[in-house]
Structures are given as structure tokens and as C-alpha cells.
Length: 206
Image (cartoon, rainbow, N blue to C red; front, side, top):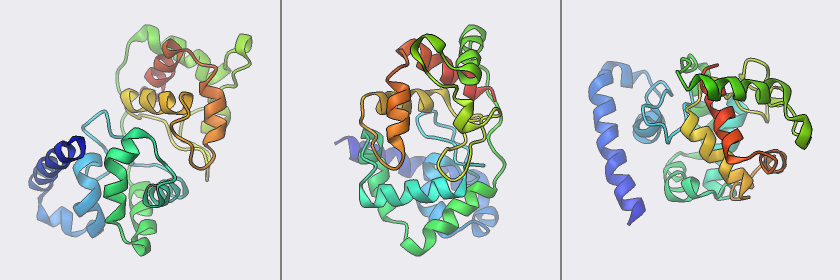
């Protein structure tokens, strides 16, 4: 039921994206992106739906690993199961690298506006961690500008706060277990729901 609803919504958004971008632009874009990715992530990897992450400027090795994990079902968080398992299944194995490199080559998303109070608190956690709970600074793995450290640690700069909050929640609940997620499970377990929102608000502004 949920998957069918999402499929109809994705189909509508895909038609809108192609209508707005035009066939000339679409023709220069890898076919798998037009057919599979654009509906939720945009032709250039900048999503207009906060539930779905921006892929523009993301690290190519990271994107490659995530697509493969969606295809083999080792990334099995709720959003992965309901949407990305089906979407990734349509991308041929020999096109995964092409898709990842394409999005990595796009300009990253612009920073967004968030609550000043949340951003200020999130900046402290991102840059300095939380000494009282022995929580490391996010910048240690994602860089002081939030653009990530290849190959394991993804770009967070400009990412939708809704998406970051959701994923940190998945790590905290151990619903996301693929790749090097054990690191994020440990770190997120130390964060309160309020602190998660603060970090997500700050990374959105980077």
C-alpha cells in the first residue's frame, strides 16, 4: 500500500521534473538518472522534497556503496526498504559508477535557513562534540565544512535537516546497519532527540 502510494507520487514528480528541465537537458544526463533518480533527487541531485537527500556534490565512493547496498538489501532502514530497494534494482550494475560520478560532479546544494537557536547549538556539537557524554565532534569525520572525507564519510553540507534527522534516528535505533554504520550507531546513541535536531539544523546551513 505504502509502496504503491510512493510509486504514484514518484511518477508524478518525475513527469514534473522532466517537464521543467526539458528534453535537451535530460538528453545530456545518464539515462538511469532520468528514469530512476530524478523523481526524488532532481536531475542535478538537488531534491525539492526534504524526505529525500540531496545527492549533488556527494562523494562518489559513498554513493556507489549506498546504491550497491540498496541493491543487495544490506541497507535495510525503513526508507530503504519502502523506496530505494525498488529504485536501485532498476539501475544496471555497470551504470552504478556512472550515476555516482554524475551526482558527485554536480554543484552541492545551497545552504538553507534554520532556527538560529538550533543552529548555534548544533554548531557546538558539530565542531566540538559533547565532552560530558564523550561524544566526538562531527567534523572529525565529515570535515569542518561538512563536505565529507572519502571514501566512508559523506557530505552533510546543505543536506535537508529532515533527512539528516531521520537517518540519525535510524542509526540510533540500529535500523541502519550497512557499511561503517557501527560508528554512527555508537555516536548517535549518545545524542538526545533535541541534539539530533540541532546537528541537522546546523549541517543544513553549511
